[in-house]
Length: 326
Image 1 (cartoon, rainbow, N blue to C red):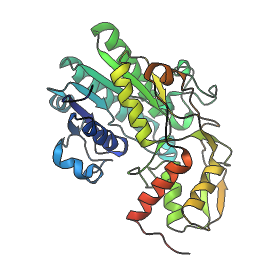
Image 2 (cartoon, helix red, strand yellow):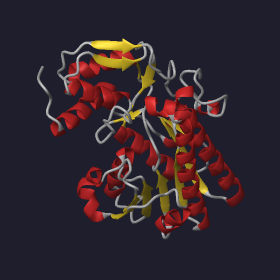
Image 3 (cartoon, rainbow, N blue to C red):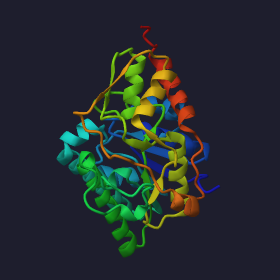
């Protein structure tokens, strides 16, 4: 097995996607180290894994901390990032750009200085422009500005991709780049200010809010991928395609936000009405990936259908916060 006995650092490993990566690596018999500032993550996310991994709490905005974390590692997976929902991203573009470029570039520089064997750059579908071709191919990642509601975050990820390409060309670094599309699942952020659309709607439905306010008119579409599928795509990219060439990790299942919201309300057992607020930003009109490269280069296919993934996520959330009867 590729991962057996490899020493792997997961930055942001106590976060949503990072904690699922930690478990997947342990299942593959890797030796795992986590560095996380715990600003967004939580040791609770690691569960039983916490007892069998090394955890360091550190700010990766400091290069010295990155060098200390990456020392002795065979592979580094860069999940650490400042993440938020569309509201926060829209109103804090400079902060999102500054924080994410600093973290990402520091981690890459540390892997270069320490000659880490392989590095995974976790980029984002937020690099794409507002009116991208749908399904969106990787070749459109640097056309025009990113979608305005993700301007700072999107540009930060573009800068990180560019640095990865330069490190690969100048130093021969083995770097994989993935662009995950809208990811959801257990351990996501359910805070309305920082959470994305699925956890925010699950929280509102479970708490019995009525009406449930949905941003935009509901016609915008998204392609949502379950977190364990994203993790599988990430690990395959680092194993099979460490060539600093971005790969979309997503699913071809596209859904309108209105249909998504109605599905969540139904699965959560809520009777609440939906109210669409067209004065609020709704992001890109459509977002769905072209997954041809992932299929061809990685042999990757998503496995969890949206209905099943939503059901799992709602059950996980409600088991930790009992539903309010209305």
